[in-house]
Amino acid sequence: MHAILSLGATHYTLADHSQTGYTQMAISHRGKSLQSLSAALSNLDGCTDVDLDGILATCYTLVFQAYFMPDGLTDFAVMVRGCGMVTQHIISRFNGSKMFTLQTPEQMTELLAPWLPTDAHPDQEVIDTCIEDIDKLHSFLQSSGSHDFFNALRKIYLALKYSIRDAFFCLTEVYAIWCTMENQDFLKFIASSNHAVRVLFLHYISIDTLMRPFMLSVRAQDRARAGLFLGADVMEKWAFAIYHSLPANMQELVVNEVQIVSYESHRYMFQREISGYRSSTMEPSQIAGRGVIDTGSHTSL
Image: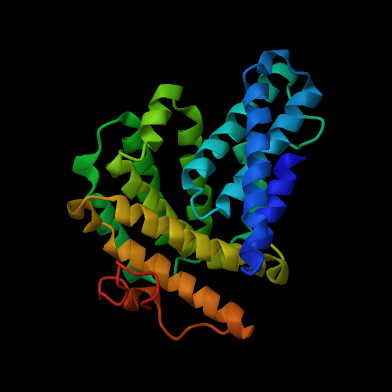
């Protein structure tokens, strides 16, 4: 219950910035939900199948909430990992869920493939720029988890050059990496001092931004727009937070990606304001590498 109330309060705060009182409500309910979830996760073997379904529902709710939190990137990764681990526990103990249809990757591919566009991403120049940028990071990587994350992200960029659908399915490999790390390795992976992985997370945000318009193909278009706009706004906050936490020599590696994310955020927000949903006449490739966006500010587009 607290997870649902927290998600609702977060969403309402983002949808109407005048409703500042809901921010504190979201924090309060999220704290209570996390406290209950932590207690439940410490005793998974003692849970019934119904208990585990409830835990999984809570994890998914907190994933969606984290996705809409301006400071929710780390929480998002943690809760995605939680979803994966609880799902595996349900499958290993009960061979399935009474509440959820737990699908294999193959079943998910079969379900979603017909809805996803098979065309290449239309802006090949910006994809090439992102590949060049992520390759510069390779020498900074140390752990096996960071190398796996790097390889998965680079694979997505390459897939975008040929098929948006293939890129979408490659994205699931990122979540599998988060879910299968050992606990101590994952804690080091998400640490704010792990600058190389923070840069990789910024590339993850860049990929999310580049793919977001095409996710409208998966859902009913009108219903998807609200989340599309809110997600764009939060992604920009995530990107700038990472950028400003990096040392100068690593900031240089992600200037293009920050510009891409910021450009798309402003474009979506402008479309929401005019309620016309008209496409901008500029493409991301016209932004990347040209210094249009001042990475010291959020308001310079």
